[in-house]
Amino acid sequence: MGRQILRNSLKSLYELQEIDLRIDGLDSEKAQLLSEAQALEAKLADAREKIAARREEARTLEEEKGAMEANLKSEGENITRSEAHLKEIKTQKEYQAVSKEISTAKKLIAELEDQILQKINAIEEINVDVTKKEADLAELEGNVATQKGEVEAKVQSLDSGIAVDVATREQTVKGLPASVMKRYSRLRDQRRGVAVVEAKEGNCMGCNMHLPPQLYNTLFRADDVITCPHCQRILIMKQEVEG
Image (cartoon, rainbow, N blue to C red; front, side, top):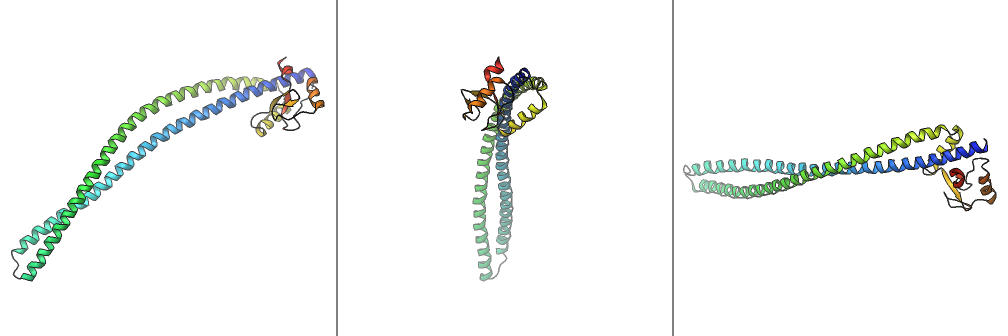
């Protein structure tokens, strides 16, 4: 590879690195925005689930109240029949037994009425809570819609920026040898997205390790693609690629 061709390749690699890092940043920002949108949806889902759970509590209480009211009616009918039966009783023993049944039934009725009242109060409390939660949900839905609109606008803007960079990247890649691109791509995977780094003042700016003087001097000649002996990233002299 000729010196000028190599210098051009290094310059293209440097530009490619800048484009890829910019795309990485945009992709990361987009992922964060999409995550925020998902969090907003999760917040709405949670609020709706809480309302549904409270409504289910109220439904269960209504069923329990209905069963108690049925028992209350049954006990009331039993008392009516027993009181009618009292008039026909001939013996004191039987009269006492029926009277005890009536007394027990009236006690049970009092307990049922108390329990029913507790159910009614609990249902009313839940209904008040559901009404408040529904109002809060309506407000939240409005806020989420606004925030999601802002997020979607930002994502669209990021997508536009990414599309421009991807197009530029495609043109830049065309000017690079396949072997260089293969090495670059492998290093990007291995080194957290950073394959090309500057050599400055005798150091690799990727890993901050000192470079052997002979290797550092070779960078000035641009005779070959030089990599850092410590982190294996491709080294460039910034003044060379910017010149």
